[in-house]
Image (cartoon, rainbow, N blue to C red; front, side, top):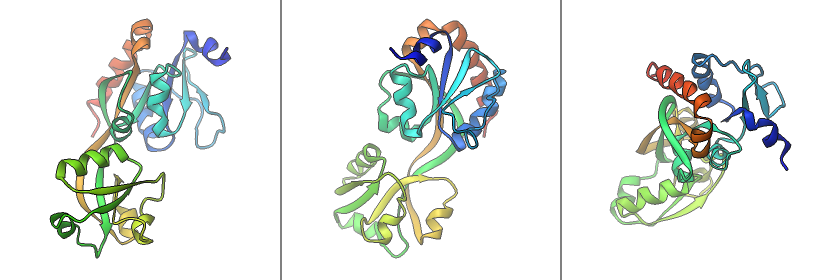
Length: 224
């Protein structure tokens, strides 16, 4: 038996990833009267207390947030649209676009690579990405033949060392691309983060969840 699950059965568990999503979610939590009492950047703990004894935050990888929520290890969470598209969204209720952690999914290549000509001439492109499903659907819709190479980080390195012709990655400021002599050649979609809720929790814990969801929705309307 999982002692955490038993202990937490009467609590609400929120799954967040460290970094920008965590930071951008704090004002939304504050709008619901919830304050996380520990900083994940300085604490080694993966389960963080809040000022509400009935709400705790678990810190997981961004790509794992939907899985923790889907299987009920967390009641709700915040995940980027990019992550949700790769996950598929099964078992998740996605009620609110929180309009936080805004960025875009883009295709980028070496500054000297003629992407438009390669696409127009029907060249088969090697594309490195961790967003395989999104990349596959994008290029298929364009009728472009690609070999997809799954990577988990340092995506910008792939074109520099000849591993790929292009990358598909999330871009915020574009500074990392420019620092590595890469250029965006296509925007696939705009990205922001969404609130995701376990469907069973929405039914069984609605009385506790609903005020938080409503506070998140009100606060999100003032974002961006």
